[in-house]
Image (cartoon, rainbow, N blue to C red; front, side, top):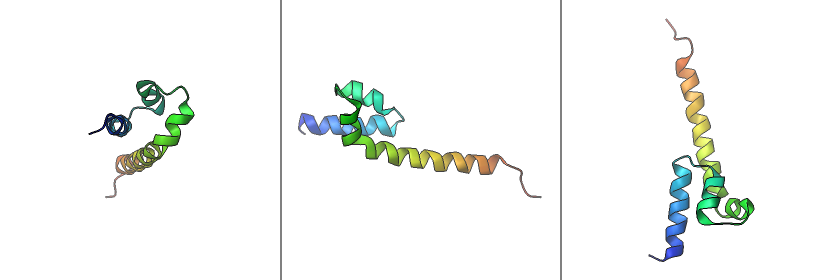
Amino acid sequence: MPLHSLRHTAAAAWLASGQPLMFVQRQLGHASITTTEHHYGHFEATFLKHAAAATEDMIRRAGPQPG
């Protein structure tokens, strides 16, 4: 596997584990967060959407129970 592919895999894994985009930027050595966001921002947006849905589900389950 080419080294560049490993970088993409690592970046996706960091974002999947909840690491912020700034962490990924620093690990990859990008001079600008804009570069990181351009290449990997769609991963973060997907994970944030799933996290928001999971949070809403937890709030629903923690609310008053019928009966």
